[in-house]
Image (cartoon, rainbow, N blue to C red; front, side, top):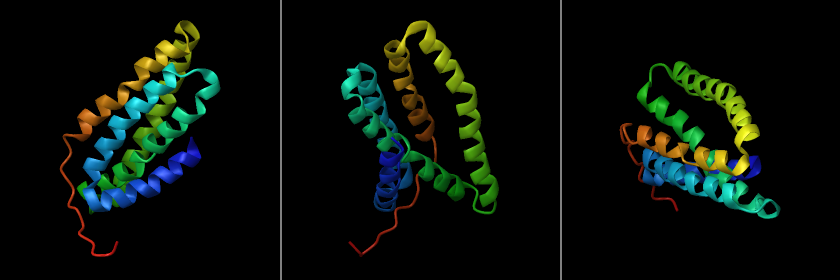
Length: 140
């Protein structure tokens, strides 16, 4: 998942410079919902494929969100980065134990099916962000 996420980060950066950061983040969040749901319904012996694809798209959005925060707070880049990373790590430390407890009680598939749709909430929030300017590059 992490290796696929690293590949996704690089390719998302290239796409964002051509299509705009917000648009790419929206595409990544919407597609991560699909791959997370596929992870929930796939048989355990085949789960590596959807998990890798989920890592590719889910982890690729994070650096773009940091870049969007830099665009929104150009005079406070350190604060913008700390805000994004602090919120991310803080939410992970709060939510992951609760998801683990829910999986112990209800099982993997039902809980992961619900969790799979959380990126839709993020996409709704990202849609409220200002659109970024697309850099027009002549190099292909």
